[in-house]
Image (cartoon, rainbow, N blue to C red):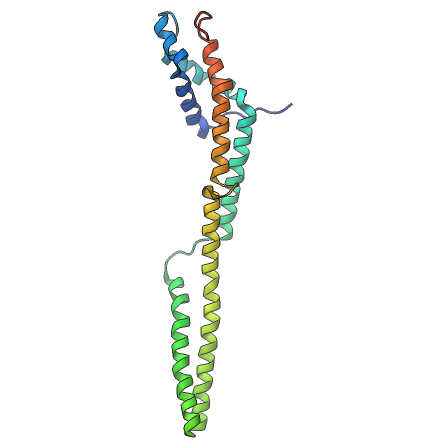
Length: 206
């Protein structure tokens, strides 16, 4: 036997929205006007709210699918936030951008000086040390540039993941919204409307 999922508190607003839509249909809305003894729309509304669990059970399959899709999307979002944590402040991104530039510029200057001294045959030891320092700074610029690519790639992946979760992919918002609409439609057709019509007098029931 398949368990029927109960109506979640966060989905109560959807249920009430579908209920108001059903009460706005012609046969439901006009019935109290045709016969004074018929329950008013407000009375029907209150009675249907009290029977929300019973009415929701008529669309239990669609509701179960909706809950499963929504849970999967929330799990993906949680995994994404754990895998790609955000970095507070702008200090580190600024350092990652500035360090390669400063190191590269300094390396170029030192290498020019060092090679110039080598060509002029002046101070060979000093020229060698300047050239070595320039090469070290050049290597530093390359390494820091490569390290700086990691946050940029991580940000790009996170944004792509965000688009997927917010509705650009089948596991994201489109799937959740599609399952929600399917449940609401089934709730209206198989749950709310039959319940309301069954509580109208037989002479007025469509």
